[in-house]
Length: 298
Image 1 (tube, rainbow, N blue to C red):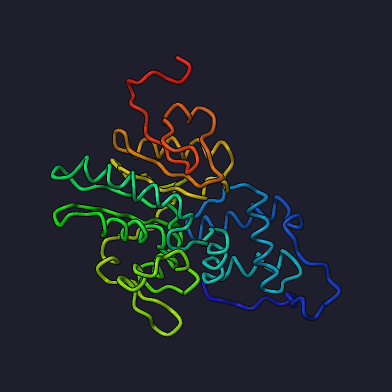
Image 2: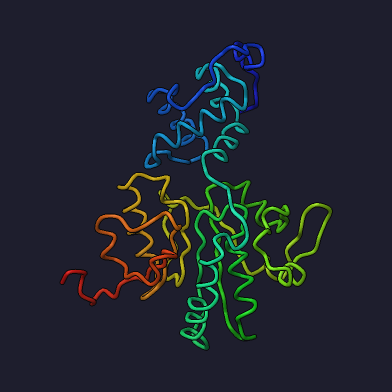
């Protein structure tokens, strides 16, 4: 398919008095059409995401392009590979920075990562999975911590995944705007980054520590025997039913006694609580429960 212009899709600038397009203007039928287009064109399924969040982001995309009517935008989406990718970018949150929520990374640096290194030293690699990694700031932050903590012979495997191929390419480049680095301590910035105009490039040695792969947590098979999973600020965009399904999948991904880090506004739901024990309630860090351990309340 090629990019096309759609007749009758006049921008808002020609109709200043028109009411702004909002999420409630998108009918369930139109949302279904958009879902089907994205699924067929990009293999991305909107089922499981909260309707209100999805409609709000679609409406924002429509406003940005200047469409007055949903029909015109759907016609564009159906005939444009580029717009499908752009909408996918808009629907999947890519807001991140290095050491986002510094207190969480303090616990990781002082407690969690040293524990994992000690447990598997001289046995096997420590495996980390960052889900919804966006521009790579989170898995690179873990790589920076490990670089300071590791002995020469320690083995580390870090995977960063996201549904957007384009954002993963940006992550692989290792180049970041200044506002992504506000939580990076000055000594770390000086040691691991080089300035290039208004941006900073991460040391190639650190970049090589992270593998970036396209992965949809709702559709693709999870990785196995992971020691630490970071799934932060992603569950809040899914229905409770899908949250529980994701948490069960993550429990299956973890190695025995593996650790899961959620976002500060997220928590366990329904029966998934029985799959984990809480390590740090403030930072939302959980340990996979021993299958032989008694359930809560037993």
